[in-house]
Amino acid sequence: MYKKILIAGASIGVLLVMVFGIAMVDQASSTTNDTNNQTAQEEAISKARLYESDELCAQVITPAIHTETGAELAFPSSCLAPGWEATE
Image 1 (cartoon, rainbow, N blue to C red):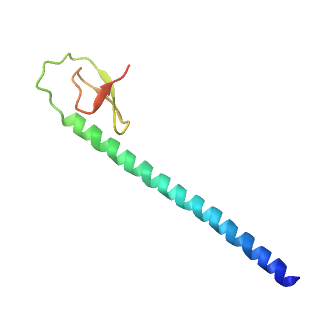
Image 2 (tube, rainbow, N blue to C red; image 1 turned 180 degrees about the horizontal axis):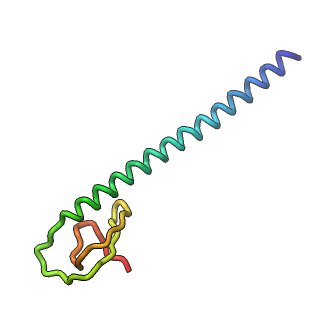
Image 3 (cartoon, one colour; image 1 turned 90 degrees about the horizontal axis):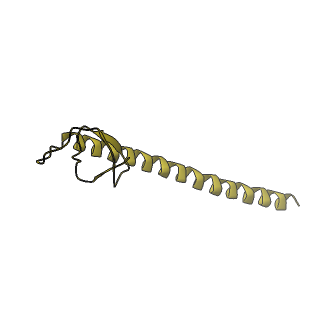
């Protein structure tokens, strides 16, 4: 009987390790994805701030979102950098 209880306890312990181990891996993966997305957003914003259009642009604040990263930025004119769409 003692062996059966020990085996059952070990099985539950293995199951708990598997469940919590998977949860910890998922959380770490999510944190990595969040960090990568934040880095991509910061890079998109940096590039947008350096962008200079050859067109004549209205000097009006234009809120926009980056189509790939979801970064948001208010442009000082109606001309947007490539990859950005105006929002309202």
